[in-house]
Image (cartoon, rainbow, N blue to C red; front, side):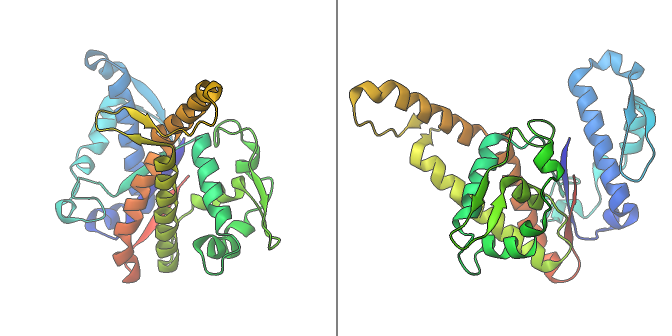
Length: 275
């Protein structure tokens, strides 16, 4: 369960399948990958799965049937090697953010957002006015936790000095929407760029990640007897910030959105989100 992102720029392959057909093929590819990761090759011929893809009724497909449907699609099109949205990879115009959103992502995204809420024309100010404030209280992002959508049991709540009330469930709901208009593509590119820069500062303040994968902590200790607890708190936070699956996937999404901007500004592209 998660959010599927397509940088839709109207190439021949995308046009021929349409959004729903293209997304359906991508979901079939995910099913195929899951089978190959979990079932030995000699046993795959007997595997049958219940497949649910956008625009179709649920159906039962064999592993062979899935492979047959994906045969041409998986190779992409002649345009894929030169496509900046997909980075030159076959059907590379796809990203995925898995749910539930992890706790550290919800925390730092909300902290970043609230920090700019009362700053005129900040990205937080713009998104709050146009999108976040319109998310109703009691949405799935409020109620389906801890569980399928978010790890945290309850959302964070904040009221700014300027009187704006917002919670982190509203923000998460606003983060996973289709960006149909050029202004939205540009705005969300800015949002994710600034969010990831904020995360980078947070990471650097507490630790550095060495080339060998080791985490080097930066811990200020006032009293020697505080060394143990302070170190453990810093280590846990550093592990969360550097090891976050959701933050890593949002970094991939940010790149996809950035690469889609030129097509959106020409009226030829947008970012489709299913999730």
